[in-house]
Image (cartoon, rainbow, N blue to C red; front, top):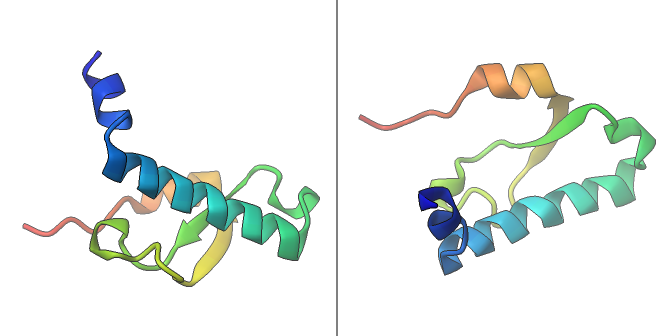
Length: 73
């Protein structure tokens, strides 16, 4: 139930919409077939405004999950 409350917050909805939009833009440029099994990685951190007109790259799901996020201490 806690996850549902987090996902329905307005700022989280905006971030999710930006992530989805970046994937759709990559699909328009590269085609749907080239993104099969891949993920669109944002070069900048999303918490620091990195999704706004950010550079993206297409990488494998395994690599994207293994990189993790750079968390500040």
